[in-house]
Length: 329
Image (cartoon, rainbow, N blue to C red; front, top):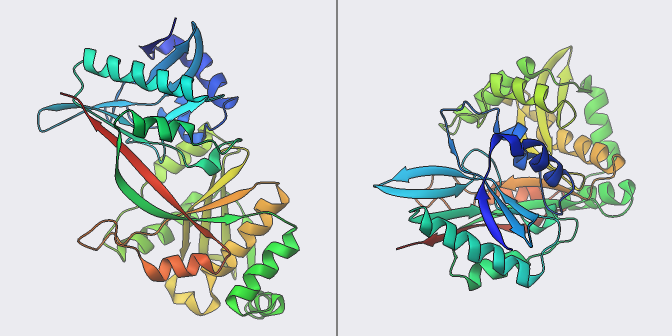
């Protein structure tokens, strides 16, 4: 029997194990991650999908209300939501969405919004589910350009590719570190990093996605999944890069920040180079460098071309993040 039911607290250990062994699950799909949000922030409505009475997919979700409409969103508190599965034949994917549609209509939802993790997060880069969503009437309501640095080949080859794109030599960056008494420290000292992060965001009339307390709490929940790189000069941080280990394959460069008083030392570039070294040594396949839309533009999808160009100089390729949506009568 194929069916769907709402997540209950006693499902937590089964859920966590399923995400851990899934094809495309990430840090953002664990119940433990979602729990760092205050309970009153989201009305959780996550779902479990069964194929022939066996758990075959999970879907993080929150119940939201807008203009009098009851909306299912996967997930407003995470970079990615969407269907997480171990294997996804077309028949199985179509069945999940069919059951999902029926469940939402039965429970008076008027709209569904899904943010699927891009293909680079899957062990198999399977997009069968995306096709099934389109066939079942979901529309892509938003597109974002994301930049991804592939970590294929030897570390030397990866870095040489970057040096060539930047028209610089390895010695140039080595001398930049040495001649200015700069050093890297991998240390999850968020108190040192946060003032730089907050100042960078304020330049764009924005606030960080996470508070300082959020980062400290996430680090305590996932002690091996947040990796903070600090660039130091004379014992003081002048920049930092916070990386989220999404899964065994992909890392997200979530924040790459610098103290603009030291911009002549190119902290942002030095930090990404060091992150590439670390990620390559650790055996990851991709660095997701994030989206590059201009938040100050009238159209929120406006590309921030200088930022895209900066990311391309590290050998990144473009990947479109898609937000799927469907209305129900």
